[in-house]
Length: 524
Image (cartoon, rainbow, N blue to C red; front, side, top):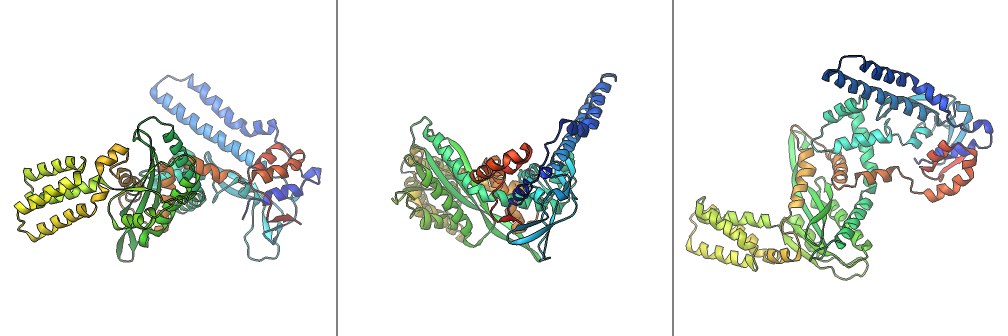
């Protein structure tokens, strides 16, 4: 369903002067707000007559805050109820929407709407299907106002943001809505609003993330330093428990990051992706590739240095082998030169594994591992580390079968990935040696929100929170929600309203301006 219905209803009223929405008067506003203002004045005056104390000051602020919220609630209720004509008969009796005829209900009906100031009563005109086709009754006014499941756009955004924040739970969010906004919701309503907001914002996530990365690249390009700007890509998996009958199945969810580093090697910002467990992580691969391609397509300056920093997991390695290594520039079709980096800290873990196999848990083993960690960052360091480990292995025969196996796996891990562990070169080029950003993303996106004590998730509900959380952590929340509310067809609306504005109230015209065109809706 589009937002075009109410514009058509407005156009239908233009032929009769008695159908034009009259602008609200100042007297009407004063009458609505007068009782609250009187209580507020009385509070402030009475405070000066009482003994001064910390308790009195505290009570004053609490009471004033409550009255200001009530002032906002009354004002919003008054304003929203003035948009439609006072009588339902002022609107056309029959309309057609998406090829279905509708008939106007004879009178306005109330709807409880939650706002950031509390609940209000919105009286609006509905249209029922003329032929009783089973379609739901439509209410143009709430649609035009962007009301989501009985919540105004401002409150819906607050509720969704509360749900996306670190450490949030449903109980905490409901308590916060009650304390800060005077809204008493249940879990079902909270989930409904959160899901609707997440769905709407996710439609704009890709475009906003692309623009955010382009701005970061421009900032990196203009920065001072000896390195080229760097576009660093990473991804990782995290174990996530999905409840099933009789227990829990642990699968691997995925996190993706795209970071921009300036000419001094400093990270300017990161955008995130996160998806629930999926076979072969296809959605993550597709969305990450789409994001990279779009950024490179729209970036007009010389290419930044491209690097891919991850551990050596199966999905991470496969993505490099099958996608990044074969990727071509979307405009020039030239083969892109990606620098593959195996995370330094995962490599260090293998050093400690070999040290324990060779020396046990003695101080000599710890000292050797620390020396090798430093050596690993020097020119040709990985070869020197492997030579040292091989020499020690020949001098210290391993008696335990487990120690032999542990040493072999750790040694092979480093040996096979030698060309991706040139950490001295990476440091000289201003490329990150560790995947700390991606590893931290697993913690901040999943652990700090979805893995709190006692939590159990279904994939759909968890993905809803992930969609919100990646936009919040990427720093694009405000812009993404602005796009949800902003008209994408302003040119068409401007053309149409140029003829309508002289005939309708300024307030009504501004409301119409903020929504979409009239395709798919005709007045009978």
